[in-house]
Length: 243
Image (tube, rainbow, N blue to C red; front, top):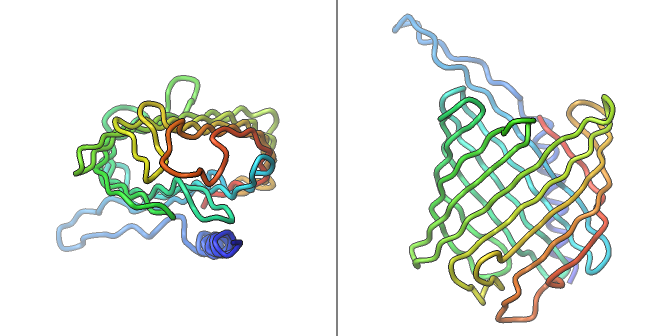
């Protein structure tokens, strides 16, 4: 029963070591024959949430993203999901191409695949991501599958600096679906909501442990017994990291 959680934690630990070893900036190339410099290539990895949720059915939650490219062209990789003793759920993996369309906002388009212990599904994705006034981070993405299903995801967060090292971060994620998917325990409309309030202490500018309170509401419709309770309020203990 616990093999899935152990495997997930081992994989995340290996990913952390990889992040630490990955250079944050690659050397810019230069085309000497053309007499012009190519666009510098950068790389950035952010582990938004790597946390254990306790109370009401414990779960391990991950949410990470990274990009490589320059100011005009970037390739994004995003992953998130839950792991429990019974398996993984809400696994969302996305590969996106992004270009700026306005100050502080990018247009993103690509592919998403739901990969977890439930039947998988592939989607096309298009959306925007950037900063609203007051530096509220917003991501809004629409999805379509070849089976005629449509979905949308809205994610918002804000970092409130209480001191130079202490950060309070409210966050909310909403997932909408046009059709019920009993095989994935998803209903119609607002099928999933995940929200939290986390207090982080930044040991350095690239690493910080945190404590928080989270609320997760699953779908009211399901075709099988849920892995976790449909609604739960939990304590979160985790780390935040970027490179």
